[in-house]
Amino acid sequence: MSAGECVEIIVNLARMNKVRDIDTINDTITVEAGCLLAAIQAEAAKAMRLFPLRIASEGSCQIGGNLATNAGGSNVIRYGNTRDLVLGLEVVLADGRIWNGLRGLRKDNMGYDLKQLFIGSEGTLGIITGAVLKLFAKPASIATAVCAVPSVQAALELLALSKQRTGGQITAFELMPRNGLELAFKHFPAYRMSLDRLHDWQLLIEFSSIDEAVSQQERIEATLSEAHASGLIVDAAIAASIEQSRSFWAIREALAEADMKEGPTIQGDISVPISVIPHFLDSCSSEITKAVDGARIVAFGHLGDGNIHLGIVAPERIPAEEFLARSEEIEGIICDQAHRFGGSVAAEHGLASMKTDAFLKYRGDIEQDLMLAIKHSLDPHNMMNPGKVLKARPVKLSTG
Image 1 (tube, helix red, strand yellow):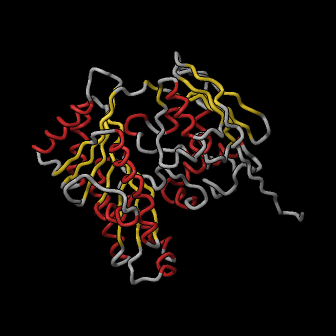
Image 2 (tube, helix red, strand yellow):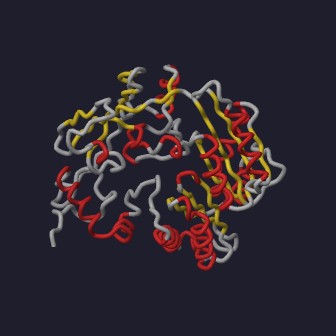
Image 3 (cartoon, one colour):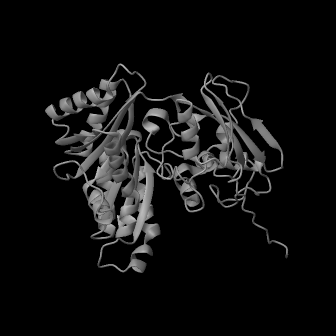
């Protein structure tokens, strides 16, 4: 091997898939990084507990990856991102030492909260091999509904109303556009929406409670009835069974695939303050349409936490190669608009190597210097997932 060359090693943790402990008094589960998310959910359910991280790939993704990327999903509005669900970590460091931070403590002020450095670091600071995760009481009552709203602004007002009427017991609040649902029904013809017809904007809403005496079905009916009387919704359907609730969720999850099945697609994953989502969508759509006349803009996602996914589908008249060659330009428009409205260009899919330039552009020298200093301290030889998150070579913190 010549000077300057390096050997890349891929570490597969799939065989580290044991649940080490479940503590139903402390409400924690200790797992190895190779455990599938769905398996952790199932183990929690056996103990009459809930592990609330919920994403479309839960049947195939490993918890180590969820931790390394700080996965979000549809339950963030109620339970937070992955980092909010973690009490302790076990990490293999770049120098070969193993940090055992597997503590099930909810109060621990003995120095820096080191686990938070590794969560969301995308493997650039160390390899997460284990975690102590929070468990929650299993909901006794769940209600799911889809409804049509006259505007995204009306959807935000319904969100505020729902928070007031439920005391914050909203598990999910998902935005679904007409054009996205039309593509979903086209490419997944077995799916059906329970509304009389599609409107420009639909919502999938879920309430849940651990109180057996409180019927979330009655609560969601009352909330939607009040919203209808106030003009915040124009149509609604409440799931009458677990099967119907699952069918509602299947339609929502199909949105992520439907635009790609339709044709060449350029995607974006951004977050903005919830209050400015309508303005962001209007402005971003306008700028994209100016750049690519006829582009189909499918905007959907987690309205309740400000995370919007965008799928920009190529106009039929433009060849795939020509459209995809403009990926950097279109992604730049999306990122510029998110930044303009005080948002993030990497909401839940991380930076990896594709958005390293964006970090410096939108966050600036100080944040990059701080992160480089952390990287240099923990991984001075740039061994751990080089080229991800931070593009520049590690350097000491600038004092100039």
